[in-house]
Image (cartoon, rainbow, N blue to C red):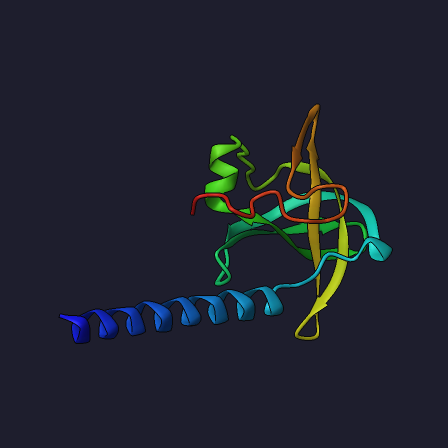
Length: 133
């Protein structure tokens, strides 16, 4: 009985370590919000969808061209009743970053008409951390 218990405890420890490493790698590879590059952009939604990273992205057509905008997980947006669509005119406050050589805009606040949708706090930390997926 004690051998089975020891075997079980070893598996639990190994699973915990695997999950901890997976979480650390995911956090390290996620783009970081940079307050120094914070800006407001305006434009029209060209495309909208869930990307490989599990987050909702949109392509915003601005007067300077199109820009990939990272919003939040689909579950967060659904729970917060954030329903955007192609053709929407948006103003987005966020951080301009580069990911794998490509420009990306990390949204902190999205404004459509009189509606304001918050994606991150004033320091740029995602509001969905700990949110059910």
